[in-house]
Length: 83
Length: 160
Image 1 (cartoon, rainbow over the protein chains, first blue to last red):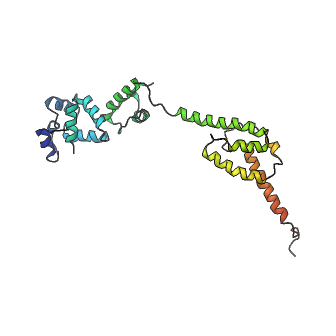
Image 2 (image 1 turned 135 degrees about the vertical axis):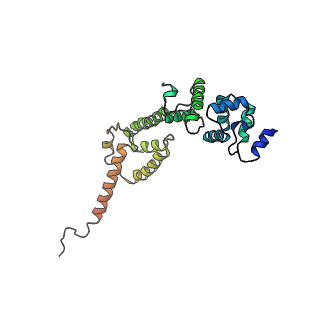
Image 3 (image 1 turned 60 degrees about the horizontal axis):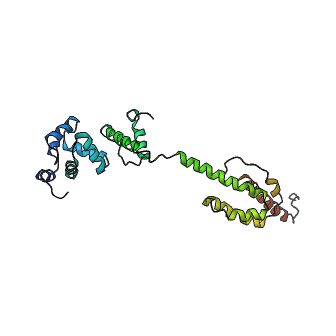
């Protein structure tokens, strides 16, 4: 992760609380919609999934790819967004 | 091979372990992912399939040691001793037993050694049967010697 976007900075600036999943860096409208359909409507739910996968980055990457079709860069942004 | 979707969570977990895939709990949200991973792993060809080899190894090891012991029995006593010492393939436990046995060999006579030879132990014992008999006899002879040396005072005299 060389540079972080503004969205990423905004996300990590404070605790995620009830922020929606689309507040995650790398998750825009399209991917966000797909995640919400699967039940991952809040950012903390996606965090929960990361934790259930024992914080294994590769597993999380694969899961994100399967669930919402995010490409590698978007997944990385999502991972580094989590506290 | 039952399909992955019909397997229980524990079975999926076990399969993941067999393929060496690090994983968390198999829950609703993770199940799909793990099933896909298992399909990929199976498609690549089975890398890890444990269990049956290990038991075979153990049985094989015991058989091997048994085979080596039968010629030792029929041979001369001294030969069997040196023969046993030079066996490098035995496990450490068995080597310990050997080192226990060899001092006993040097001290004791071998009056009934010939009688022990034809005992055919087919069972999978850790210490072979003839060794057990020998130990028993050694202890018996030792006790006899102890009691015989105690007979200097007439032990049969009842208390006056």
